[in-house]
Length: 167
Image (cartoon, rainbow, N blue to C red):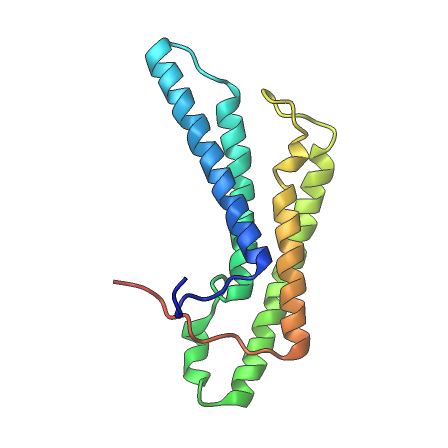
């Protein structure tokens, strides 16, 4: 590791490993299914369902892992003009954190309702509880909501070091 490479915390490394595992299983399942379908005229029915489930989990794990790094839900275009005004930056940041907490509460409430609805039903092919599809949204909303609430209570300003990478 070079001197300018940032050190990732253990939860960050776990999240990255989980996303890599999801992506590897998805790629293998789809590849095997394509080979079987076009090479032998048959396929694995569970491949599509497994890939869809893993994709949903991977997206929400990624969103949760990106939030504490300031790589998700950044409002730098809105806050950049306030860089020279620390009091205004602090209050607008608190407003942003409050809106993130509200968004997470709404997302979490909706995801919880879907988890409850899906708990008694199973997926068509694999037979897993369909509550596993909205569950990562609930967990992600809870995790991001707690992080944003902490930032709101502490009064942590939004990091401005994340410029848009538009070419």
